[in-house]
Length: 480
Image (tube, rainbow, N blue to C red; front, top):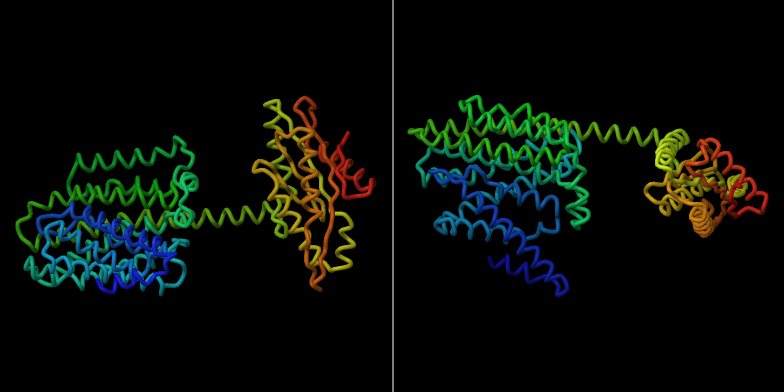
């Protein structure tokens, strides 16, 4: 306790309020988690659900600023206080706190020593390595705490260790992937808007089907009963893993396993012999553990596949140098948007951009500098355009922008802003020279009443661009 207070007071005056808030947050979160776990205790005083350890480990891994000596001290104090509030003797509460924190410390050590970023669940093999971490953390915690069960409940050490280990392992597998799969944006920048974007994704009715199937399978398991009822939700959980994101799958899996564990544990309370109860409880926990691993692994594989497909799609759809849309994709998407605008009777505009004297830049400063010019121009334009706008590289130093629902005057204003912004760009050559450049822009306006296709619009924009070149370059011209 003295070290905890000393660590808390050693912070500088500017950081003390923030550090105090972090310590209080850890204390409050851990206290609440332990108390919630205490509500699920059985006759032997062992909790069926124990989210506190996984929650603390996930917090220290995902938000490293909480992983301080003061943070560990706050967690230890919360463990002891919660156990005392639940009726434990102070000495027993302290023993339990040491056992729980030893498992958290072992898990934290193994997470940081493991290869790859386990904290992101970024690849299929990660689930196996994460399971190994859960095994190690549960084994250390059980080793530190099994003596307490042997002393207080007169279990033999093997039964005490097995009962503690199985419960700890299951709780780590249930709750740790849930915490590690929370999107990083929600952890690092927890604003309301960002959280809404992450957790409240657009709902589609078909996304409710796996949840409805899962709910039906749980109700069926409760209604039918028997030892096989525990496996009823497996297919529905796999469906959820195929349909939902990893975080959503982890949340559904944790809730389902918690319900199964509480439901099936109640049926074991009538067992008369300690050996029979311990073996039945361990068997139940291992069964629920395997049920939890299946959808989590499938979802992790599914997420890796989606990332691979997305990267392949980006490689095909975007120009590697400028990150603008490729010519083919720009044309396809523009045609699709144009058709939609035509049906709605709306307008649009097309800009054609070409770098002035680009060949001279390549000849004078080298092609590497020319590539920098192209990349910087593309980045500047994309930063200034709206989300619905399309921007693509048509070839060489020629680019095009498709502006939906943009009138003639607005399009001219956008073109002028782009021309002015590009004129202020400075690119450093390999020789250290500062290179500036300009663009000429052709603008064409379109309305649904014109019955003009995209190829014609691009041709007219190209003619306007030619007029801008003839007019002295660094200009914007409107197609007539």
